[in-house]
Length: 191
Image (cartoon, rainbow, N blue to C red):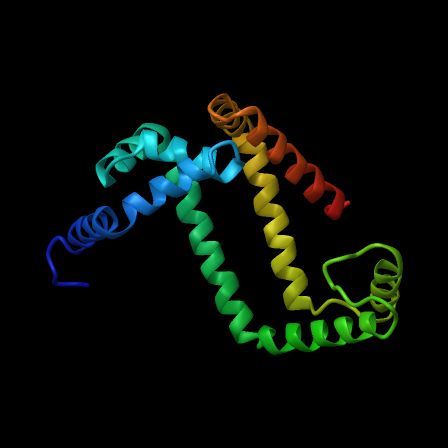
């Protein structure tokens, strides 16, 4: 990449050309066929708002403040540090061993779907966690994720609420209902 003038601009122009040549019609048809669904409405809104890479760049320059850029750069640096530490600690192997043990323990009963943490599945998972500790490197990543989430909420809750209101105003009633149901399902699974 170094030494190639205008590499990023050329890559964006090429991607935009290929999108318009090969995908634009399919994406538009998909949005139209799925109008009234959350995905269809969001895609339709994006297609109405953005017709070129320049449109996206203009939108971002209007809405992404210097504070957001600074926070994003800091977050990227922290994520890179976490990833490097994950590798240095050989955390992939530790996490795989932990998850293999947890899933095996859960399947020892009638729990056969790891994504259902209720009833016997929850009981078996709870019994596993009372005897086995989450690997420190995994716990560290989880804690950093929670800290990042809290930081975003503390610093950007108003901007997020404003953006959500703008998006909601462009959605159909059925898409709003779908989004609320998905949110409730996610909240229920996390509690």
